[in-house]
Length: 114
Image 1 (cartoon, rainbow, N blue to C red):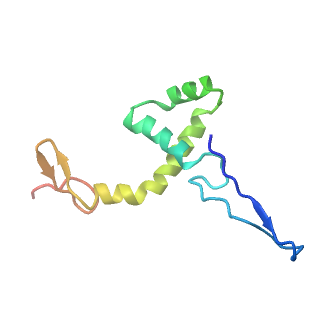
Image 2: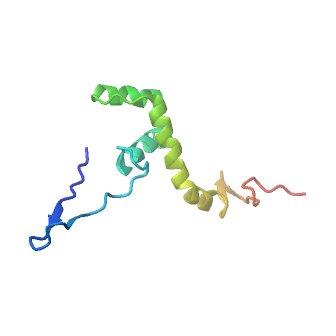
Image 3: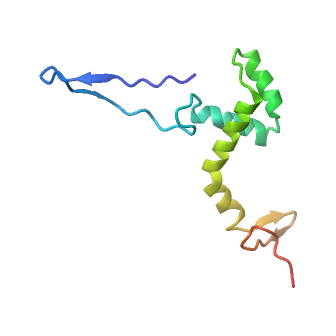
């Protein structure tokens, strides 16, 4: 668990002024998961091919009761933030397919010879 400390500072001469650093931006605004937690869920799902059902069981063994719908919501929100990266990788470049490169059209589909 990551704890973000934001101390409050006050000036002895100025009784009414208290300054505190703003909270860091989160992937899910107002939510408890940090970027590291959301990244862990994404890596487990897409790189390690672990289903959200299995992830809920793993978190439950660690004492964290997370519903599958909660994890699915986090995956969906993170995917929204990753959309520019996905666009850059899939649309603006050719994806290799076996030993050949595959040219993509503007919609992201394989270009076919007419």
